[in-house]
Amino acid sequence: MTVLRLALGLGFALGLVASGVAAADKTDPVTEAKAFQQFFVKKFPKVAFDDFVNGPYSMNEDMRRQWEDKEQFPPYEFALEAGKEMFGKPFKNGKTYADCFPNGGIGIRQTYPYFDDKEGKVITLELALNRCREANGEQPYSYVKDEMAALTVYMAYTSRGKRFEIKIPDDPRALDAYEKGKEYFYTRRGQLNFSCASCHVQSPGERIRAEILAPALGILNAMPIYRSEWSGMGTISRRFVTCNSQTRAVPVEPQSDEYRNLEYYLSYVSNGLPVSGPGARP
Amino acid sequence: MTNVMKTNVIKKIVFAMMVSAIGTGSARAASEADYVAAYAAAESANREAGRLRNQWTVTQTALIAAKKAAESGNFDQALKSAQEAEALAKASIVQATSEKQRWKDLEIR
Image 1 (cartoon, one colour):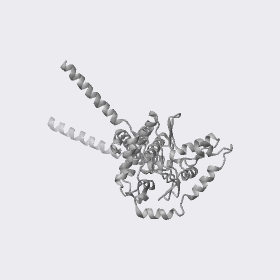
Image 2 (cartoon, rainbow over the protein chains, first blue to last red; image 1 turned 30 degrees about the vertical axis):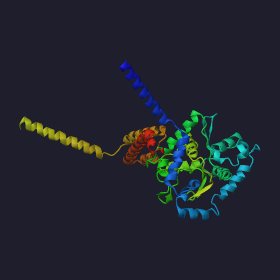
Image 3 (cartoon, each protein chain N blue to C red; image 1 turned 120 degrees about the vertical axis):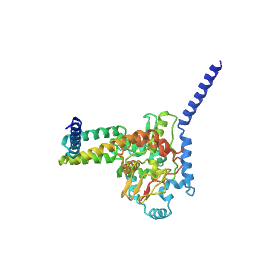
Image 4 (cartoon, each protein chain N blue to C red; image 1 turned 90 degrees about the vertical axis):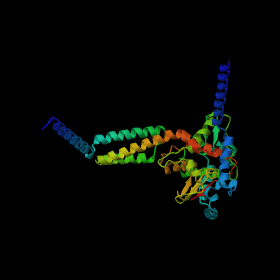
């Protein structure tokens, strides 16, 4: 009897431990996003919450002054004009981008990426734009070149100030996409053995060569960006590809599952921050 | 000469031959076959890194350098670059494998 009690007790205790481990391992995006935001708020107590979307300018007063001067004649202005024109120009079949998006595509940037339950995958704004083109008989644009950047510049501009509201529906596949995006974010890669987090969690505000690293919090809210280093505009895809190359890792294909999931995770943990794109960076 | 002395002399000769053989082996110029074998091993390791979605740009650079050297007939350099590519590819595999768990150490909680 005593032996049976002991066995039962042990089994119960093990069961509790096992379920405790399972509970600890279970992903809770709401709690995680809160912890993520708190980490940066505590690390940079002088930076106002909304200011994190301004990346390095929120961390360095000199850079901020230069940026404010530059904003008098923002370098993304040409792309904005081009994007507005492209967005309104009908396809050969007479339809426009507005026909593919809710609210005619105006003021909706803050809801991308979203999880599509029919496809079971993350849909980014860049992907949705190309799918819109293909659905209307047009060739897709390169994800890393000017046309895609211009379109997203315009869509971000019409959404400025709106707060990110990325949703994770009650669907294990959505949670899996978020979890995989998180794993990609923290995984070290390339010969330099850097993860996204090595620069944008461990070292924001620090210099890497001549640049000041931006915090991961709000980093996508400013996209797309004009980069002086590129002498042009860059999409989120271009940013991911370049980051990987800089660590001497071979980038995966733009809009591959890895990058889509990464964008999903990074956007979700920045929920509540306003769209500030299009942005400009050194 | 006693048997013991004979044995010692033979031992010395054999040792000298072995040292000489090793020396000759390391000084020998690499052949095309050496390069082909090293390149195949490097490519195979890099394919594995690709399967793990974790290839390194420097591995590709070393593979290209190996091919270029082989095309110009410099098999010593071709072999060296191919071996470097294999070492880099293997390091990227180790990284991908260890990061499957290690990424969690960096996570903000």
